[in-house]
Amino acid sequence: MEAAFERDPHARLKQAVHRHDELSRQGLLERAFTFAFRGLVYAQIWEDPVVDLEALQLGPGMHLVTIASGGCNVLSYLTADPAHITAVDLNTAHIALNRLKVAAAQHLPDHDSFYRFFGEANRSENIHAYRQFIAPYLDETSRRYWEGRDLIGRRRISGFARNFYRQGLLGRFIGGSQWLARLYGVDPREILAANSIDEQRAIFETRFAPVFEKRFIRWLTSNPASLFGLGIPPAQYEALLGDEREGMVKVLRDRLEKLACDFDIRQNYFAWQAFGQGYGGPQAPVPPYLEEANYRAVVERAGRVEVRHMNFVDYLRASPAGSLHRYILLDAQDWMTDAQLTDLWTEISRTARPGARVVFRTAAEPTLLPGRVPDAILSRWRYEEAASREFTRRDRSSIYGGVHLYVLADS
Image (tube, rainbow, N blue to C red; front, side):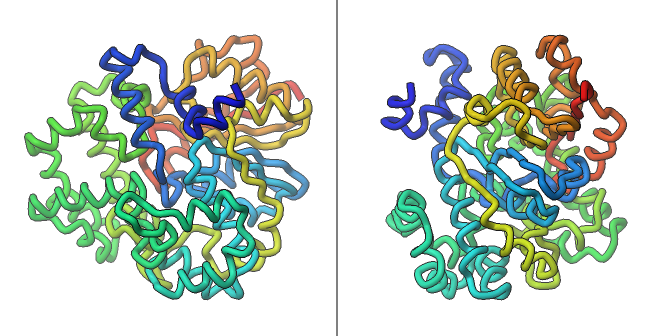
């Protein structure tokens, strides 16, 4: 099996997503998703690290295992001073991006150059900084990725001179969504000028909400492939839809309403990405790892991050019993079968130290574990239901139905 993975760098992703016969409708959708997912998906991760850090109670001496995604949260978790962070991912582009961020933190000369590279990500100086300060310290595979060419012949690293946050599957999805909004006479950036939550709501209700009533938008969102750009595979589309009678268009409207109206937009960098595809300049909100106050901690602790191209459960299988303190699964469980969930939680339970905490997200609101993971395993964990509801309410990315916290109870 490992030899097969070496021949096909996307074999692990296929193993995670493909559930149905390739000639069935669902099987064709799954294969279309894995094809779309081969390149960069998330230039920025879409889970709120402030909520994560509160839920995790991460601290000195702890070893955290997380899915890497865009890498913003991996570096942001360093502000809690853990002993070690292992970031795993099946996507080769995400691995290259995480290693780029770690190398940049270690070798760029100051906060200004670090912020310019990832906070602005649209300056020619970034390419010079890459060549002088970062490239010499990158591993060969990551350097080959960034200096390789995209489908139209541009070196991938040049994305940091052309607004990197417009790159990748999600960046193109947001760009396409903004183009559609403009066809209906709505400039998504309008809301970024709001001076209060009341003003944000008024703009949403009068400008954005009517777009979701358009016949074409309702038809488009009824197709699972339309949400591949959000990184949502067919299985997760069904979970996201749930029992919503009005269809996916209502689900998406409600999630966008929360993003636009529930948080002060002047404090929510997720909203800036969704409506402006960037961070908006030095006075606008940014992820914790880019804040100047956190810069020294990120630089001094970047060497504690290990980035691995592998499946989460495979990493756990190779880890000693009782060796890990904290786990972040993002929304990966939405993709899993009951057997895969059981395998995962068997390994989490085996490797967990006393007091271990697990944080994950789901497209639908409820936790998906009861009835799918055997009670003999799940009974060892305490579901923090009230805290999970509060974390869900406060997650500024607003795209998930639930943020869930489990704590090892038999310790």
